Length: 264
Image (cartoon, rainbow, N blue to C red):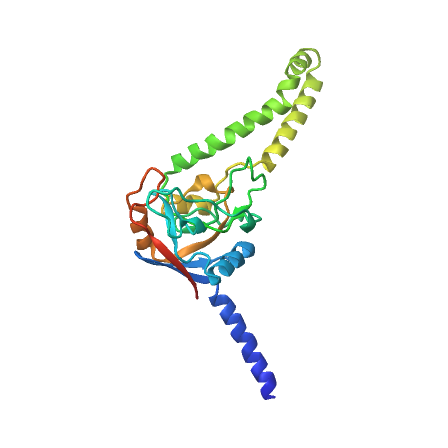
């Protein structure tokens, strides 16, 4: 009986420990930032925890700081980097598949994974050897609408060129000679455009995103391009202090911000 009770206790203790391990503290010489890692991005959560426990991030810097944008750190080449050195080379060995979730977006304080550009990283795989925290800014409804149009209109234009333009002369002729066939063909083309547009990498904000971006702020233009796998739960003042630091031409702070990541 005691053995059974002990096993049950150990089982539940294991569950509690697992839940606690999904929080980490990023300690810096400017203060601590507490982070909650999301369970619905398990690959990123587990990779981050593994690297943190191995001490991968310890002694690295917040090496890229852009006010109203992000504070980025964790790159191994930032350890003991002399002043003025350009930092930020990731590791191809630490790339993992993206985990885009509609309910996880670039609000202020979001913890995200950087990646290499799409011309060399076609599947938008994340580089978990480093990370960034969103500083961002507050947007108006009009700014969000303009941002959507700036990204979505070129997509619509490309689809029109693909499906409509090659048949334009033929359709103009049908419009005069056979209106019924013209309408059928036009509906067919519009349906193809609609299907491809629905599957395209367009930008559409949910009501939750609109509410957050117009009150708390963030970086809506990055949604769907980079994986968001956690968020700041305390230490926003530290994020603000780091974001306010003066930087060189490479966006590296003149004052080094060293960090250590501890798993709770």
